[in-house]
Image 1 (tube, rainbow, N blue to C red):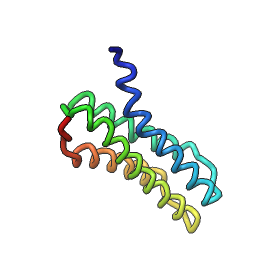
Image 2 (cartoon, helix red, strand yellow):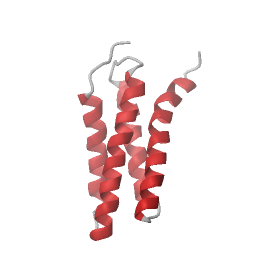
Image 3 (spheres, rainbow, N blue to C red):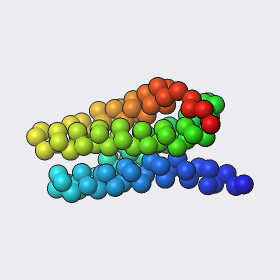
Image 4 (cartoon, rainbow, N blue to C red):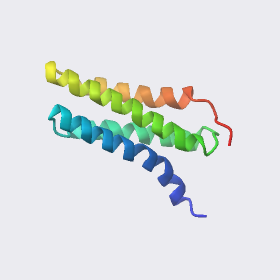
Length: 115
């Protein structure tokens, strides 16, 4: 079995729900997708993948559940960002740091799920 589909499983589990939820949120808030929003979403999954495949020894079931949890958490952060931007503003660095913190908290907080 090739290793490429193995990497696509967590990416699909992250980008599909996040993309659909973010599209709905952007339409509801009548806002456009910005570059810093896409970068902060990509950095979160990139750090999670790098940490998981380098240092963690978790079963395959975590590679399905954790990206879904990460997508939901990042979507909540982005919706809060859209709500705050409408009223005043938020710093880009704050959003990036929050997304990185969410990625590491999910990585370290979710225990190994038995296969």
